[in-house]
Amino acid sequence: MFAKFLKDDSGATAIEYGILAAFIAVAIITAVTLLGDDLTAVFQNISTQLQGAKTAAPNT
Image 1: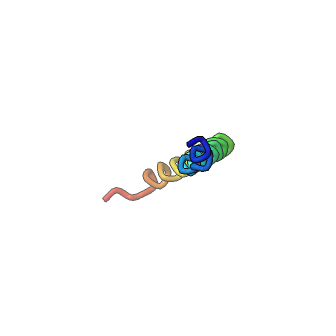
Image 2: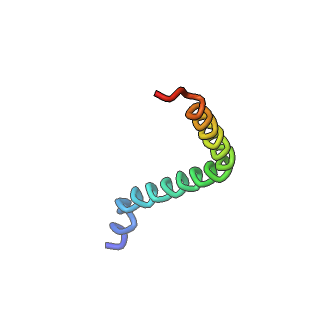
Image 3: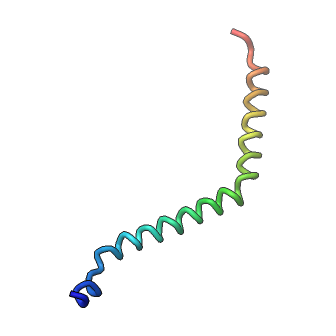
């Protein structure tokens, strides 16, 4: 019975998926942290340009 328990690896796949998901989460958090300020600046620039386009558009 103990040998059968040692050979049973059905739970290993779930653990491997959990570890993989944790690594992906860490990678996403790291990327967002590193690129967060740059993305904020990009969206702020887009917002400013859209506001300028809105005020420059003729009234219809």
